[in-house]
Image (cartoon, rainbow, N blue to C red; front, side, top):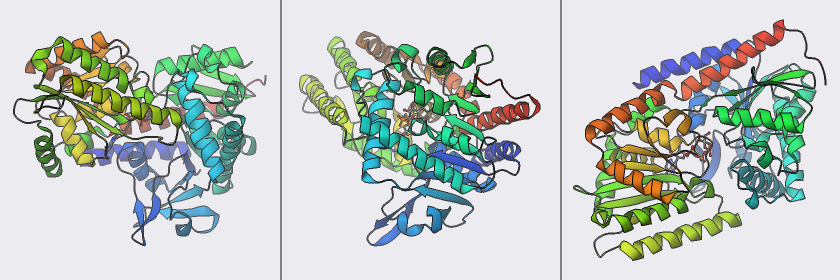
Length: 507
Ligand code: GDG
């Protein structure tokens, strides 16, 4: 698919959004902002969306001239806004408002670092032992959600269509709903939703559910997360749960729960994997790390997060080289991981354990001419990353829990030359869509991962082609634009139904 086709797909998404909004303001709310300003050598420079959902949504926002509400965390953000914290973006052709929410250091500590990343993140990834439910975190989370909600309400005097992103904002919908009963509110939850026995571990389970049930539509990546959410509502509240229809009647309204598996801009990813910049990157990278000639390599790409299964993967690789000495000096593992949330203790400890595990494996098997595990910790340019995807013989995507995992999809879309093999965890949301053409493994079973590596390295080119073609069909058909369209089509259908149906009985 070419960029022209991508443009056409974006236009289709714009039309669907326009149908839903009619003359109402579209307000997107997320923790991270699409554009941030900071100072570099005294000059103000702007960071703009590079890939991902933000890049796909940006042209839609430009076309419908909506408002994006987000935390202004750039060091020059305050000096670039007008009254009400608003700056028009994109800078070269301003067409929509970015309304920045300012957070104090205490709020960043409590709402972001605290409640979002040390309570909700481990909770939703089933790691309740890592939860740190400090009362001050919860207070800051509530207060900051109020600030986001107030920024939404300040964006327009009439009833907007609001789309909240992610787990940072579970409470904001309720405050917006109370002020604007006729607004259309939707929410997409980017991480897993756990089963009730796990969610019950959170002391604020009732308030979180009440906040989310102020939405008309809640989206998750998979059907499993939808079922878990319905179970939690059923167990924890007196709302009426209609499982067949996947909807919930609560406080006089109905909330619909649907799965929308997020995709990537697959056409762009395929193009990126064939650029000159990517070729140049690969030429020097492969030389530097000895990935030349017949040498084979596997690739892992992620933030350094305990949910991504990096330690377990290193155990599996150690087992693989122990059981298959014939692959020593012939096969390398490239761990491309970026430090993440480094100011949180659990992440610092993970970083040091991963470093120790890499040293252990390299000390055990490494030779003067070969380093079994190569760790790359810097942020790579998109074309460089795409070249690594293209050249890798296999990708090891083995999270112990992951809402979706877009790396799996990027790897698939980048296989434009000799196709590689996707080794994928059963516990990644992506396995619902990509289970068929990948080799599925259990991340906690090192034998299954080691066997998968052996299978992938021995797979014929024909078998790899068949598998990758199947996977590419899915990744291209269910890309980020299809995701936008299906979300907004569903929202429009709900809105039509709501206008023609009688009010819900109150409970
Ligand atoms: C959350 C959920 C869900 C990484 N290193 C570089 C780089 N990346 C990019 C990848 C990919 C992105 O980061 C990571 O996305 P994931 O989806 O894998 O994971 P999370 O960050 O945990 O995201 C997840 C997602 O939200 C969306 O809903 O899928 O389950 O946890 O796009 O390419 N990009 C560049 N250089 C790097 O060095 N350019």
